[in-house]
Image (cartoon, rainbow, N blue to C red):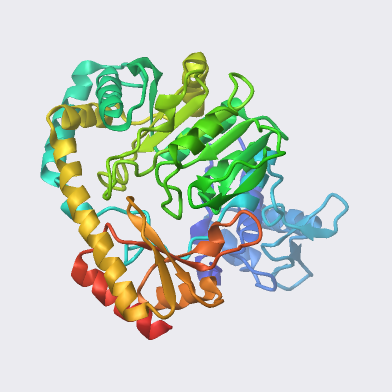
Length: 482
């Protein structure tokens, strides 16, 4: 912010014991005030006599500093008049004496990785406090926070006694290996499991270790934007693969890519379930060291209409599948713990990369989570929320059909925490989302999740985080907006 003339002296701190002389110090500090914009262009400075008196230095010290800044082009000075600032904070003086654009305002030169990530980043239509019917969230109000807090406190106190340990804590790895084997059919030893800050961190780690520039990666279309961002940033050529009723389709005539990213247990965003035959077909494309598959099981714990389908990873006989999961959907969104089950041949490489990139979850949180699982709290919470979220899914479907059935066609997913409602007649879904967000209902436009030209327009609606009364009120608001 610009400063008034009477406080200029208060912003200057001259140290008489400094090796740098008073003239050099005063010149440098005045130059900094001008370059930062705090002394704007056209602003007169105090007279040399006034500033010298305020600073307690000789008048010659101030005069010499003014003369130096005038020679550099920062000040305009003439005999008998107070000096005036000649440039603003967006300019600097070049060696030739001409005013040049400020280096601070120039766009920095980014790495190829950062440039691609910036180009791929997707805008969020909402931020801040959670509002109905934002997708991708469970209900934190239903989480046993007191039980979790006790686990955290015990393990935070014990962290000092334990000292430094492995990045991936053994107790949590073993608990996860048992849970994933019994509930998801994952076949892996504890040593294959890496504990990370999020599922997105797992995708970043895989991209950094597996994908090279110009490698081809297949991703479902529409699909998860975080995967698109991670693999495009690594330099991959990302190809969107269309969906049918069984999820991602096998495209005849296309050579197998370096990597295939999929969400077979609950396709993001449609919720479709990939059949066993389709899973087997894709596994037939995988080859050790040539074609890898990343299975993101982001909310595979929530199946309502049938028994959970075993993970694709459990069918893999050649060690070609990465299995990615997270606790943020089942527990609380701020737990910041995800995990990666790595193919055996890549464990050591991924652990080295994990340490050097710094994708590490806090050790006391890992220990607390291992205790939470071992004591049965995790499974008890999961059983309860399955019943709760199924009822909320059914309630949202009923409300949409009752209030908006003429305008929206609902695709009821067999599981998960969100669903897709498509417009029956052509409609700009992104414009509809803006209206809904302004009215207090948060949704996601289906077209915003397309990799190429959108073929579908609709809304992605979350139901897990909202009680039935809140869902009803949100759908009434939606009906008033259309």
